[in-house]
Amino acid sequence: MYYWLLKNVLVGPFLRLAFRPWSRGAEHVPAEGPAILASNHLAVIDSFVLPLTIRRKVQFLGKSDYFTGSGFKGRLVAGFMRGVGTVPVDRSGGRAAEAALLTGKQILAGGDLLGIYPEGTRSPDGRLHRGKTGVARLAIETGAPVIPVAMVGTAEAQPIGRKVPRPVKIGVVYGEPLDFSRYQGMEDDRFILRSVADEIVYAILELSGQEYVDIYAATAKARIAQGFAVDAGQVHAPAAPGGRPVPEVASDAATGPRDAPDAVAPRQ
Image 1 (cartoon, one colour):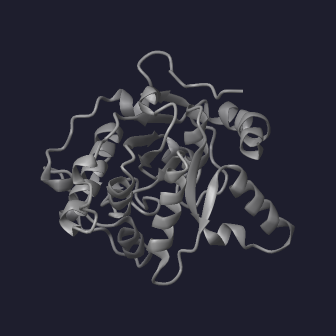
Image 2 (tube, rainbow, N blue to C red):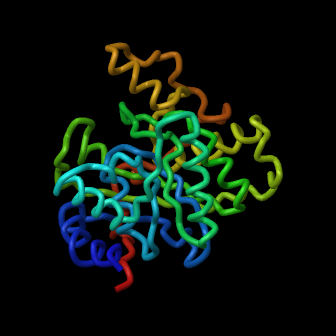
Image 3 (cartoon, rainbow, N blue to C red):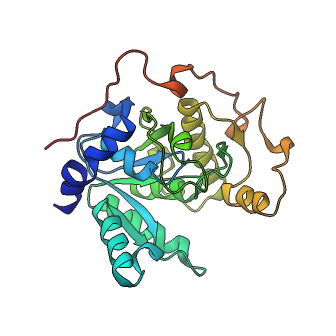
């Protein structure tokens, strides 16, 4: 109930007014049953804007720090994060990945939508980075379809370091579902996991038109923080994930809808 109140009354209307979200391909999101929404990640507001373009509730995995703050501000942040569908996951320690996978599987087992960022963290430079294999394991173990998603314009609305986003038009592009049932029972094969993760990231790349960098976003973020530029040799100009050709992306995928936006109004 709190989720729908935030989405339709308390927060959603203000986000729609500020960002005028449009969407394309929302019909690829199943009306019911489990599915994984695998998206690029350019800004904090990605998790707040994406759900505005589809009717169903989307649950994202979030670091437990959001839920453990003290005082009025801490309780406010925790309540807001729960309200928008964020599920806390302890990302500290060696078993953090297992905890995230278990939580993700529980969400999918309940027949819900799981939002996940294959890059593992926000892109530090606006490019698309190597996907982690957790999303591949979830897809194979649960059998849930993977819907590739491209967020468009959130990096301009909220660049790294900017707390209050600018009122910029934002879009969400959904791709056709990816079915990995052919790999059932092979979730422990690291080569299969890498292949599936690359396929998912490639599908996102086809929608977003970003430049691809074959290193993890966390690694790129650490190098940038230390004052080093990401090696240009790791930017795949002639190839994309898995050695595929770089897709030719229509310009409107990066600038907005062709004519009128086909944003889906949430069900009241």
